[in-house]
Length: 255
Image 1: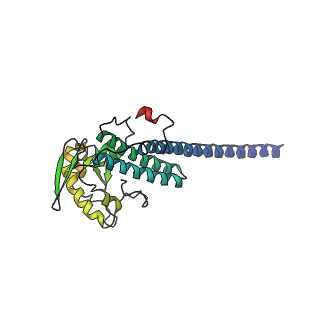
Image 2: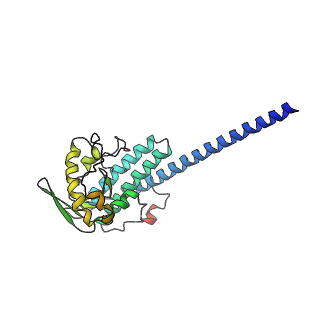
Image 3: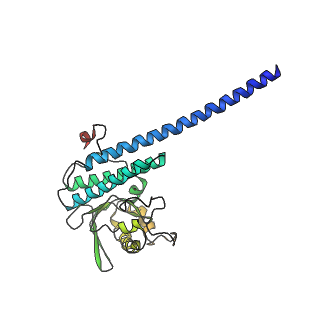
């Protein structure tokens, strides 16, 4: 009788452990499925815009070209994604592309469409609310909240080289070398050092950024690290990072 009771207890424990293991496996599988579905939704939404819009001037053409780069990058990431974090990276890339699409639509005088999910980095960086100009290495770099023939390179806002850069239209894509890293990043960091103080005062959320900008480069930055390179960034990603189809048939009902 005692042996039978022991066997029943052991059997019950084994069944409990197996049930919990299946539960954890089901939860992880559901999270993976949700992350993949979300990534595909934003990727397809971006594709629907990129494949159906044509720029009418230099700012909108450039913004749509940047959006197309994000679409290509997101597609490559999607093909390789096997985990929830990797699918979330696809979502981030596609969302950044949609910010460029909104900028292009605004430049063409079109309805920019529905608001997009914000990120902590973009919120912290804010946006330019007045035209600004800084002189760096004998050249003038300008930025404005509105596109123009001079300021035709859009940046959706975020962190570059550990610093918040306001969303806006700039006279040149000075952030690209920083995102690539290596030798070219040094020049970008010199531009950024001036921009952080010059443009920061004109950005929404400037008060929150003042402490970050006051010291120029981040003194805590690892001197051996490529300036501006995001440690979590895939080196194979599109250098424009900071990071097809239709949205379930309802895309153009929103845009």
